[in-house]
Image (cartoon, rainbow, N blue to C red; front, side, top):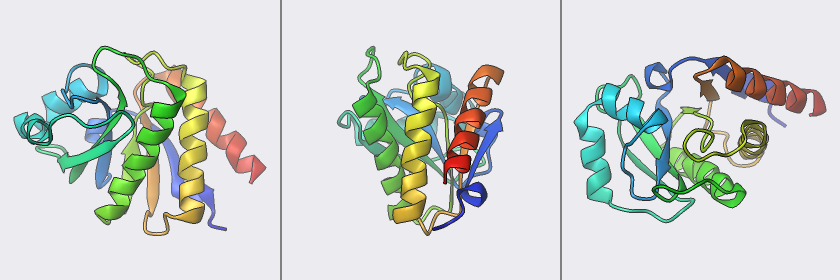
Amino acid sequence: MISLEDKIEVLKGDITECAAEAIVNAANTKLVLGSGVAGAIRKNGGPSIQSECDEIGSIPLGEAAITGAGRLAAKFVIHAAGMHSGGGVSTESLESATRNSLLRALENEVKTIAFPAIGTGVGGYPVKQCAEIMIDITSWYINNEGVSLEKIYFVLFDDSTYEIFKSVLEKKLKST
C-alpha cells in the first residue's frame, strides 16, 4: 500500500495560485464560471477558460470535463459538475464528480492535482461530510488506480474549511 501521507496534502490558500498541474473547479452542469471557485478561475485565468467550457457545452451531473488553464499557474482546469446551475450538491453528485475528476487527470497523465471543497459554497453541502467523502475517494484512488498521481492537494480558502479537511485527513492517516 502507498503512503497516503506522502500523496495527499491539505493547504490553505487560493486554488487559482496553486502550481499543481491541474486544478479542479467546483462546477455546475452548464460549465458556466459563476461565483466562488469558478468565479476566481474565470477572473484569474482569463476568458479562454469560459470559451473552452462553452465549446464543451453542458455535461451530466457528476461528470467532469477538462480545459486549458488560461493565465493560471496550472496546465489544466478540471470542471467537476457537482450540481445543476442554481441547484445543490448531493452525496452522489459529489462522489461522482470527485471520481470523474480523478479519471480526467489519469486520462491526461496529470501528476499533481488540486481540489477545492466541492459543493460547500453555493452548493450548500456540509464541509465535514465533503472532506470525508473526498478524502476517502482520493485515498482509495491512490491505493487502487492512481499510481501515476504524485500528489493530491486540497486547497481551502478559509480557516474553518482548512481545519476540517486537515482534521479529517489526520484521522484517515491514523486509521491506515
